[in-house]
Image (cartoon, rainbow, N blue to C red):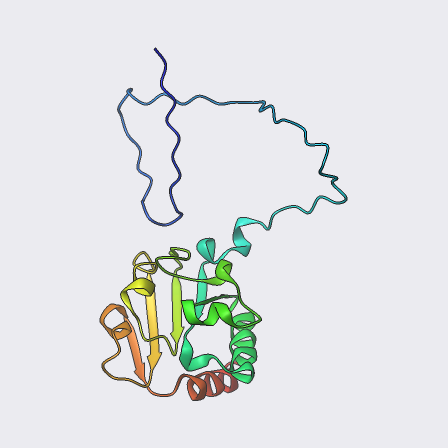
Length: 174
């Protein structure tokens, strides 16, 4: 009797390790037959973004929280991300803003990330967010609330206004 097991694992939740066990069987399926639908017309095929275009696979991520939610501040954060070669990710409340979507969300209901460098700007650090950043190598947190939980998981911290921090950093790296 044959059993089919199918599972999905979110990126950066588990670390893949090599095993010496021979118990695992991998079956590769080369052709899948899908039922054609006469109600659907394909006008154009657009390839998916490469893995490097996803926050889940980025080496550098700048995470924005409510402390960086203004349009002007988002533009400056994007400029900083461009200069640092980083991707922008956001906390849940910012997914309601026009430039972002749930694809940009970090955390329990978003992506789990494992960048080499994560800079959080104006992120409070609720457990729903921090559960998605535990595999980050270095976390730099900027928040004006000295009791913000993000500082409990950060490697480097700056207590102060995230908007001012970005403006000063942009001047320094020009």
